[in-house]
Image 1 (cartoon, rainbow, N blue to C red):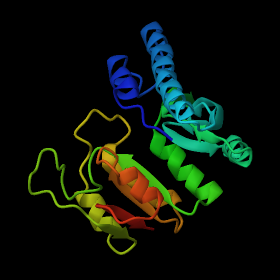
Image 2: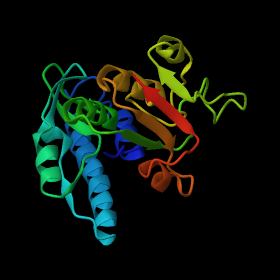
Image 3: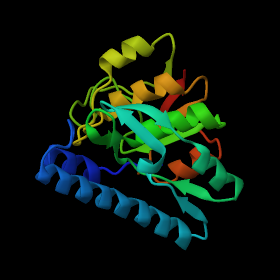
Image 4: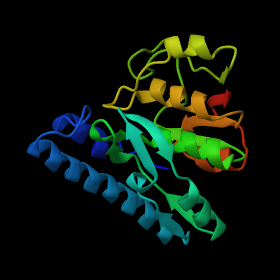
Length: 217
């Protein structure tokens, strides 16, 4: 599962897509956003294929429906079929059908959360551009402290402190990510880590110790 960064979020703001599709300009922006998110997915698939990994691209708008920006249905069957066939399913955040708003943005965090609930993986790993969840935005506040572990006992307090991402994120940033995971993990362990730190991805996949936030919810 891949976030789309500016390929999605900036378009949503530019074309005012966050609260419904009503005008011709928003219709245009909808298509631009879907195409840009598809571009990200294709680039990820290309990179994986170049490394000899077999993939299956699963468009988010084929598996999720929302109502007023909240997921009301999510079909995990395409992901299960891909895994059963030895393929790596690839999906990005994108625009999806919305019963109230016509279309609305769906973040990658929604996909992760629902797959965690329905497929019950051994572990969820989420790579970001910071070391995990902090008491404040570490890019703006040098005194921000990494929260190394989040569980049911400290979740409410963490949600009060967790900052939103410093980048443009119409789906809630790091705080929104945590809220969605808290709803769906159901005991599945999760690690949020810095994907840009060399060696981190390999270590976290193999169960090594890295600087990160561990979730047990």
